[in-house]
Amino acid sequence: MASPTACKTMVAEPKIELFVRSSEDGESIGTNPFSQRLAMILMSKGCTFTLNTVDMKRALEVLKDLAPGTQPPFLVYNNEVKIDVNKIEEFLEEKLAPPRFPSMTPKNKESNTAGNDVFHKFSAYIKNQSAAQEDNLQKSLLRSLVKLDYFLKSPLPSELAKDPKMTVSKRKFLDGDNLTLPDCNLLPKLHIINIVCRHYRKFDITDGLQGIARYLQNAEELKAFKYTCPHSSEITLFYRSAVRKMP
Image (cartoon, rainbow, N blue to C red):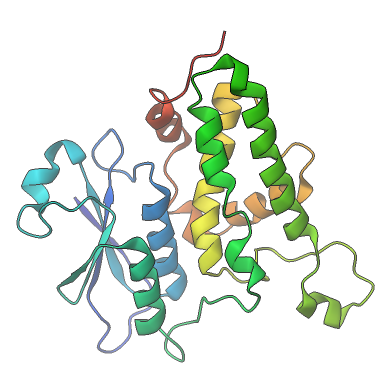
C-alpha cells in the first residue's frame, strides 16, 4: 500500500506519512484535490515522506487503529495525526521552514485569493440537473476563469520593477516562477476542471485564455504536479455519476 517518495536525505528528518484516497484500482492516487495539494507541498519542500494510498472499500480495516472515523487525506508527522487540510498546510509551512526547507508563502497577498471561486462555480455547473440553468452556470464559471486569466497575465510588482514597460506577465505560477501554497491549492482543482469540462461538456477552459493555458502547461512540467496527479481516466470516472447527461 505504501510507496516511498524520496527526496534529499537530511539528518534527523521528521517521519512523515501522507494518507490519500486511492483510485478505483485501489493502488494509485485517487481524484481528490486536497490530497494532491498536500502531496505537492511535501514534494516541493524537498523532504522525505511516504505516500499511502487508501482503498476506501477497505478503509475501516486499514485506518481503525491509526485514525478511526477519519477520511483521507490526513498526515502523520512523527506519529502525530493531523486531519484538517488547512491546518496541515500551516503546520508544514511552520515545521518545514528555512533555512532547511524552502518557504512556500507567497509574497503578494493577491496570490492567496486568485481563482478561489473557480472550483465552486465548476461544481455548480457540472453537477447541475436543470437544462434551463446550463447556460447561466457555464457563463458564471467562465467569468471566474476570465478573472483568473487576467490575474495570471497581469505583471506583478516585482516584474514591473525589473521591466516597467511589461504589459503581459511571463511568470510561471501565481506568485512568480516558484510554486507557492496557493498554487498547490488551485492547480489540482484547475486540472480537474479542465479534464471534466473537456470530457463531458466539450468545453476547453484554456480556449482563448492564454494565461490559464500557460499556467497549466508550466504545472505539467513540474515533478511535484505530475507525480501527484491522478490519471485523466480516473478523474472522468470519478465524476461520471455526478455529471448530468446532456442530450
